Length: 287
Figure: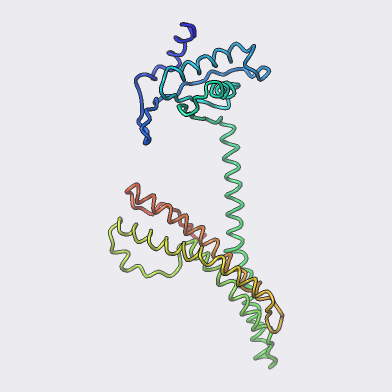
């Protein structure tokens, strides 16, 4: 390797010999990665690309000269990723290589847009199952209740189907409403003892209760699905609505509550580990 190229590397990587971090596995890693120059992609090959050849030699020199090497890479560096991969393949020194990877602003926006899209879809599904569908069911329940009163007390001709519809809609809306209550943290709790505890002990109680809730919710998912399958042959007596439809909201309630409970449990464990002890997850406020 030429002296000029070595000097160029020293200018590129000035902190290599002075700043290190000790990793948990005992490795001493440079605090600043060896930055890659922007290598024109050209025909996509190293041979005949002067900048790519220079970069290849610099990478190899770094890998030969140091016990552990930290490379700073990005998709905006052109052919540099391919060059580094070729050096690693040629030298077989992958174990001593650490790579930090940056993404461009446009890629960050694309990733952010994708994640926001996923969040919107998930939030929309939760709103559908926990707000809109229960509201519709409760509206049907109320209308049916009024019809039942009219036929029973005005016309003196009670309708059996109204009782059945009221019962079915009440059961379905009840389970979904319970999920919504958990979402807003509005379910019934007895927290007189909890409120008197110190913040760390509150964190411990949340972890214990969260672990129990998560195990129970998850443990009931499969049995509830089996139950629904067994109930597919049974129907209500008047409108012949399959009981598998009536109780189909229960597994939905369990899945949503399991995911929500697990998320809160993880966040509480992190709070305990970080010694902040605070409730860091967001409880959605009712609009």
